[in-house]
Amino acid sequence: MSAQQLNIAAPRSGDIDPKYLRQSASSSSNREMFKWLFMRISGPILLVLIFVHLFSNLMVGDGVHGLNFGLVAGKWASPLWQIWDLTMLWLAMIHGTIGVGTIIDDYTSKDRTRVGFKVALYLASVAIIVLGTLVIFTFEPCMTDAAGNLMDNSPSFCFNQ
Amino acid sequence: MTTTFEPTSTTDNAGAVDSFTVTVQVRRYQPEFHEEGYWESWTVEMHGTDRVLDALHKIKWELDGSLTFRRSCAHGICGSDAMRINGVNRLACKVLLKDLDTSKPITVEAIKGLPVEKDMIVDMEPFFQSYREIMPFLIADESKEPTRERLQSAEAREAFDDTTKCILCAACTSSCPVFWTDGQYFGPAAIVNAHRFIFDDRDEGGDMRLEVLNDKEGVWRCRTTFNCTDACPRGIQVTKAIAEVKQAILARNI
Ligand code: HEM
Ligand code: SF4
Ligand code: FES
Image 1: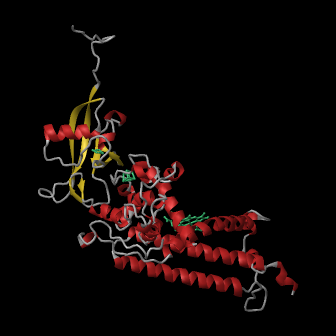
Image 2 (image 1 turned 180 degrees about the vertical axis):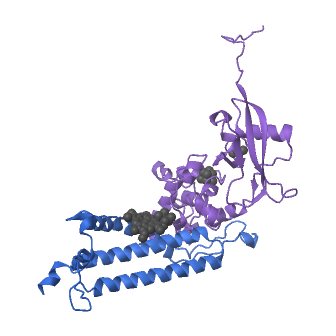
Image 3 (image 1 turned 90 degrees about the vertical axis):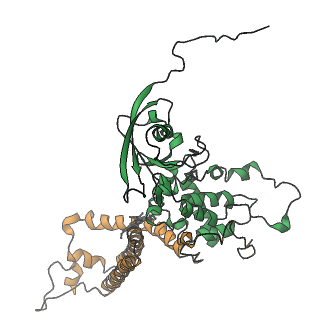
């Protein structure tokens, strides 16, 4: 039976002090549902993305000691790691933004404070997502100094050109 | 002819119950006299069979008649005397003093998140407003009205058995940290009572209730902290019921 067919007033409706009425009448959008679902789907995916990321950066090869400009530059030369890091960036940022948005809702009581924090949060998230995406795709691994010499720690493939 | 009944055995102190002193520290709010709430303690002699409610009665009847709290049945059925006892929501009539640590004062406060009016009395209207909004009554299709009672299988009854037990004490809703910061949240009790009808196969208003709870202030506000399940004096698996309603909304929309 659809919601439209039946229209039954709750007992005592119309007889209620307006101060007790809920401010948000049913929005009939699934916004909150999708936010909830996104947190649950992105969480486990992030779990895999983040731990493989940590393992490949900190444990494989020279481990922490091998972590430098060259390692990052080398990884981003491969489409696999480009996609990997891009997915991680987007999922973590959107997941984190929704999560911090929830926390802002928790701790702010005035509308103005809440909107202020939310605007700052969304601006920061968009800036980081845009910059991060830009860096992953336009990264120049073989950078040279003013004299035209390759930078120290450049990934090995730069020297073969 | 007269018959006398003799007990089969007698003990001199049969029926004697241990007594002990206990300090009850109550968060008082008396708006006629003090703008702010304050703590007040009483030390009373109580028995091993007494509950927190009995201590409150003793204080009210013998020491300070201004102490104010709700209670009706005194047996865990009416749901009037939910309060914060030693920091957790309980019915004062279901907590035995001897089960608490009586070497320290027992703290008693009003439940949180609803406006306090006097001592343990809170304004329950916001709580009941959420309850009304989920339409806590059977909604049946009149065109299919049966000529006899609506039969239901035992399995179908089982689906919502747990949530029929609610006594609307508000212990769950007022234990929920989301409700503390967002008084507009429907809260666990409203969801439990919606669950009771959503999963009742004789009811046809499920879609409407799921729609109501798909609101910004509906089930998605729940952060699964389990405070409600822990608080429920009826042992209802409140968090599980909320999860089932979330699943039902998802199943309906996807
Ligand atoms: C490692 C894998 C991760 C998993 C499995 C995961 C899972 C979750 C889930 C299920 C929620 C929703 C909690 C709720 O609604 O009650 C959540 C909330 C949140 N997540 Fe994650 N997450 C992960 C990584 C991250 C990362 C990388 C960030 C930061 C960028 C993050 C930031 C947050 C924040 C701020 C919240 C809101 C906390 C709250 O609601 O109190 N999470 N996470
Ligand atoms: S679900 Fe339990 S705690 Fe909540 S109102 Fe009902 S009886 Fe009280
Ligand atoms: S007085 Fe009725 S439930 Fe405690």
